[in-house]
Amino acid sequence: MVFPPKCAKFAAEKKNRLIMNKRISENVWYIGTDDTTIDIFESQYPVPDGMSYNSYLILDEKTAILDTADMRKADEWQANLTKALDGRQPDYLVVHHMEPDHSALIARVLETYPALTIVTGRKAVPMLSQFFAATPFEGRVTAVKEGDILELGSHRLRFIDAPMVHWPEVTVSFDETDGALYSADGFGKFGSLAHTGFYASQDPNWKDEARRYYINIVGKYGVPVQNLLKKAATLPIKSIRPLHGPIIDDDLAGYISLYDTWSSYRPESDGILIACASIHGGTMEAARKLAEILRATGDRDVKITDLCRSEISANVADAFKYGTTVLAAASYDGGLFSPMYDFLHRLQIKAWSNRKVAIIENGSWAPSAARCMKEMLTGMKGIEITEPVITIRSRMKDTDVEALEVLAKAL
Image (cartoon, rainbow, N blue to C red; front, side, top):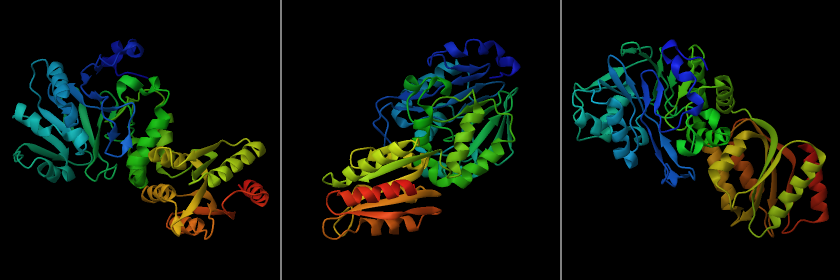
């Protein structure tokens, strides 16, 4: 990590910083909060390690708050802001993203600092009144567009439009002094900073939880993410400061490469995911046998997941990780067993594509799972179904094992 000259004195202490030490460069402070009591993020994603709501403060000739936090942590965030300001009055509140986990405290900030100006993207302006109908915004908002600069003194924030990463109003900013990209939800991850560490290099699980975060929250919008990555490639970025998760200030090329892979819908691994939805165990027996055959005949990573007993967002992330997925499911009510249906539905809405797929169905009297799975796969781009499609009748037999061996060779 190469620090700008003003930040050089902080380089030596970087590795030893604790999260409680919020200063991240000469004039920039971290004022965000950890949420360790939240159980489900966005009312659907389990977060056993909590979440961070990141917010930053630039203390220059002009003072700028960069985003707020979720209402759950309002008092803690305001205390962090007040302490960092140390009696100064903020001039600007920069709003990169209007989702409530980052913008919930806008009205409170305006009430506390009535002379402050909100700086945000043009598409965010009407959202302000949507979220805060009782707050007067007239004359208190400056709308910015691509390329606009906010002069703070030695710090200059250059704004970059990032529509649909992952809301249409998103803008990111680049601090030309620190070389810092304030990336909104881009490069975010699940987990509190107390759990992960303040910097991504301190977090051994960054990839897995960042993948789960990206695929499930931003994954549908690969093209907009690619557009933002192209813009970012023209900037001398030294640090990425997201709205969730640790700051990235080391091996930026590696992290950006992962984002390029994920947003291009390319597999991260040539391994095989076997996703199984079994009612009474017969389908799972076949899935495990296939895994055994695959592991015995090759050196590819083979992962088996029980869709009935595992967390769906992790399964969706794994489907994006691996280049090949085997779908093994029971028939149910003349259709498809619901855990598999739910899994494929999630893949549909997240634009899963460009993968090889194999199908195993089970049915005691009228197998229907394969037909339903094929119908759901039809609407996805670049999906190649590997033959043979295998039908199990209640329980696996010797002839079924032979068919699984043929399928393993085909994979």
